[in-house]
Length: 315
Image 1: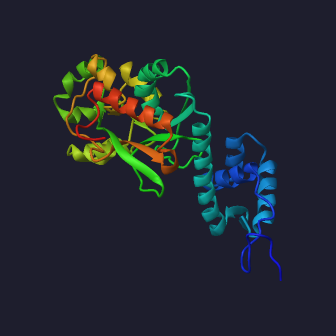
Image 2: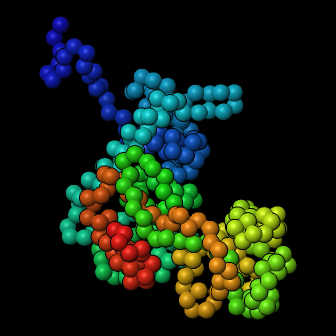
Image 3: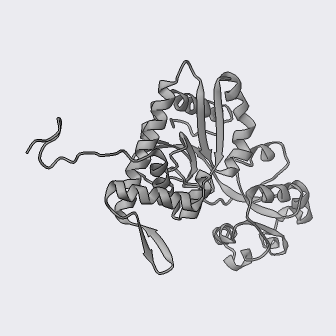
């Protein structure tokens, strides 16, 4: 039997390449866990995502989605394939930047937690933009503070670090979480000379009571003292309330640093949470040689060192 040039017995002949739309669809569904989330991210309809997945099933020859009752889940084989697609899309994006590179120009997309973006990065990033006027910056505020698998992102600033294949990580900033309040609020409670006065203070929370419960236990007080007050879903709202003297919150000493230094906020107590972790710089291996990524990394580290925030010896 004759085989096409370059192939032989047991070698598959690729009849068609999957479309980029189909590859982005399976990657997004696998990462986000639902067709509707993928449709929202890619700005298309759910039926468009389903159509792309059906075409991809035809090209690949295996099932991508399985229905279990009312739920639809991506198959393990499709998950594995999507992980390979994610790496390939990252490599394509990095290659496109390099191919179009004339000096330092192009688009750089950086992901970071919303708090870091609003509390530090947005206050300093103008310096980078002025140094590199031909670079278009896109700052993505990640809902998942440890996100590193969005192929649209060139490099990630994360809170905490989870070991992931094909992602290079390094410590960026150490952080402490501790009660913070305004000077006026501190005066209302006589400086919290008696720590038990916290039971009469308005405790402000981000999401749930966990941080206050954990901190109170470290301070030798019952965790149940922390199960009251006001819960907000947005850290920036908590920050505004604390500045206005509306209560006391477990704050991040990195992103609230400027307010601490200029006296808008004070730290009444010494115990801290999460001292074993902090912010990390995480980059897909395919993007490490991207000159825009390298320049941003170097600038970020220098800027943090200028602010005496980057640990000595790191880098």
